[in-house]
Amino acid sequence: MDDSKDSTRGRVSRRGLLKGLGMGAAGTAVAAPALKKTPPTTRVDSGPIPPVRSAKGRVPVTLKVNGGTQKVTVEPRTTLLDVLRDQLDLTGAKLVCNHGSCGACTVHINGKPRYSCMTLALDADGQQITTIEGLTPKTGLTPLQEEFVSHDATMCGFCTPGFIMSLTTFLQENPNPTLEQVKRACQGNTCRCGTYPKIFEATLAAARRTRREA
Ligand code: FES
Ligand code: FES
Image (cartoon, rainbow, N blue to C red; front, top):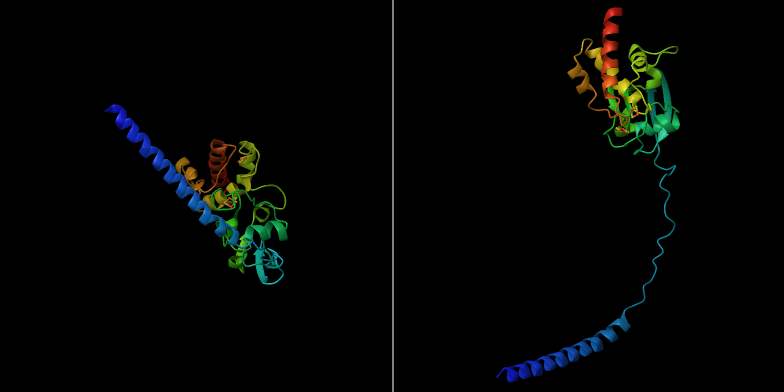
């Protein structure tokens, strides 16, 4: 009984195998001419790749930067940060994340801290822009900058201009801040070297000093 079953199973299995091979062969026989008919791949020549930056489409923009007026031409997609750094040689604002998360590019636009990497130069047309170069006195430093130095609040210094720009307006609006308020004011700026405690101390010291000297 068991042998018969095995034998049947064996025959069916062999038949199935042969059927399968037959189908496979048929499939191959059908597919082969189809493959032969496949047209050869042809390269479509779409002409030269257009340049990413083109003189065409550039537009004039007037930027009021650090008390002066600068006329530049830009592509509409150009950021304020790129114009400041690449065309006006104002490299204090730093390009780090380039998408509005680190604050290294912070400048003042009409007196408010703004990420210049997230601001189109076109949108800054006619606005009052101040960079760290314009904020810093011709000789010496602002009280906040001096406190950053004396509190050793910089390591690599890459984030420092952005912090100074943000905290300067913060102190103008909050001359007697608490530590918590200072921490919140720094939320839009990142220091990868981790100098936050010293930045907070320097800011509180600058506030005390400015109140004393007022
Ligand atoms: S470079 Fe602008 S926010 Fe980071
Ligand atoms: S001092 Fe280096 S990132 Fe802040």
